[in-house]
Image 1 (cartoon, rainbow, N blue to C red):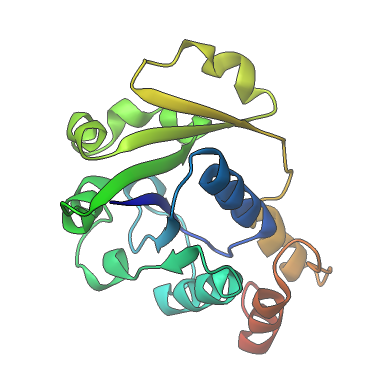
Image 2 (cartoon, rainbow, N blue to C red):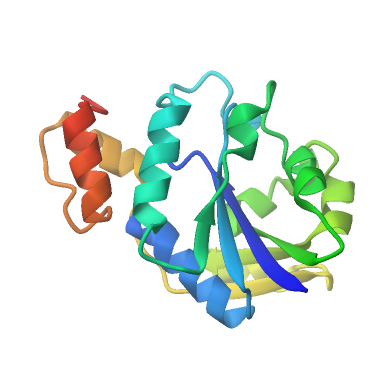
Length: 189
């Protein structure tokens, strides 16, 4: 059985905080692989401006390329309609895989608003990542949810996009190939 952690998000852009969290979860939960799944149309970000999916996919591939335990899937990008986690897990399940869904505590706090959330919990183990001040709130999680406390890494995609717009450096916030891609493609300007 292959143990796979599913790590979804817009990854606009993927940054070192994403990679550090994924690696720590992989080690702590003894996962064989972390599968990064860029979302096409995230239902919880409706109306927000996000980069074209092919840019986010390319950047995620660049960000993860040097870790043999990381992989990237375009499953949500090739499927039409909203990017529902339930549909993704349903498509990825197999008798040879044990799936875990990696989500931040901030997303878990609104988990009951997710499409078919009760069934998501039947398709995958939930690994909730708590950082910094989230840790105190995360103590009362249900038994079937695994809590993993991580150090606070204060990097956000929003901050990175703003820094690029302002002409500031994003070196050491994103992997170097991602920084070069952002510059070459003129993203976030």
